[in-house]
Image 1 (cartoon, helix red, strand yellow):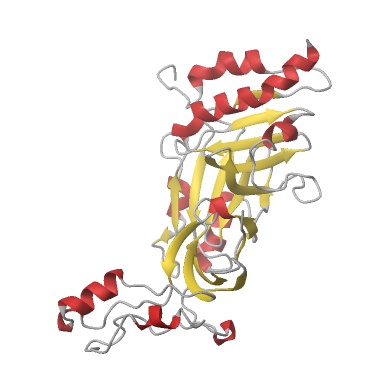
Image 2: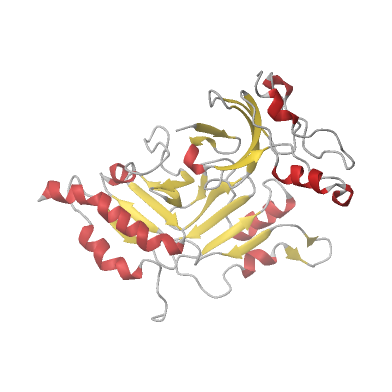
Length: 121
Length: 205
């Protein structure tokens, strides 16, 4: 079982936490400007890297607060824990998941690039 | 008063029957109808000081900490801006939170309103008390935090899991743990504890 370091309650067992998926996926500035494809990619497409990954966690049976953490998806090691509002730490090394899907209101480039990067990480 | 039923009311006889006296003993009982107030405020703020003045007890400042008297009014830290006050010395009455909540809403000149919340949550959680030399051993069968006195001294309280049930575990005295599951989990928690207490009963027999 993982021992997760809640920023408010200290280290607690994994079963006390709720997983919130990839962090730093902002709501589009103008959702109406998105094509159906971009909207679907904002809703459903997430990075799946091998290595450091910024993700959201909630200490659901403790303080019930949300926080962000960088976890290595290969070793399960928690590399960093930081507040929800803080920017993604660059210390995570190969943290490739920072290009949030649909971050710009008129973004049109290939959005699922995170999956391409996962093979070389 | 007779119309009131506490969350573990139906299990009172089972709890008494499962309790074990003597050196390896462990006893389980419910503390019924104790008034509980949910407090939402940021410690150190104007609202916090008004609430502390109205309650007559200071708010704890970090995880695990409790303030006040464990046999009367005390306050448990739940999160950085959420606290639970419990008074085990009396029973809840109608309009319990009014006096404290009014302190946030002071319309007198120079006072003004401040943000924060005080709500009567007396029915939200049941209070079960597990006492005896084996109380820690019973809880350790399913508790996810370290209950050794070195890590969990008297006066310590955390919100965690016991078995599958989320609850507040509060070490109120040396061999006494108060467990505060949600009321709907009270019956299940009692049966889980009775099952965990069974081995200590067979030792005595």
